[in-house]
Image: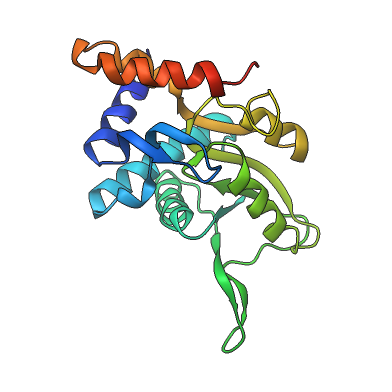
Length: 218
């Protein structure tokens, strides 16, 4: 396993973002592990998270300037931290996020921050994709921006799960909307990391059993 992947998984655990147990995902599935960006609580943690997203951005998108979109609520801090990290590395990009309810006073509207203009490209930054539900919600919101194209989505972890059919949720999103979805690590990286310590045997077994039922065929 590449060293940065191990470092990222260790970071997710130390920050309480990666947890093992019994959880219910947004898709309604009962899952044996949970990725929760809402557990990032300190300046140091959010700065580190932004650095990982910036590294992934430069690796996949390069120095191309886009607009970062962070879906409320967890995506907001990710978008801000990623924008700061990119800026520190010489790429100053604007960012924005949505309100859960449109504001009918003041500046009004559903978006906060920079509002992309026709011809500009948006990159969505999310915590995780399980069945693709959250991404479809984001696309419904972003469809109100005329002439704006979504260029890519970045997430922490590819769960390698089925979407609405038998294909992976990330693959379904890519095929449905026509943009790539990138992750820093995937669930098999997490399994490989856990298998290095025999004390994690129970969690490894539970995740593998879960994937046997809900894992994508492709």
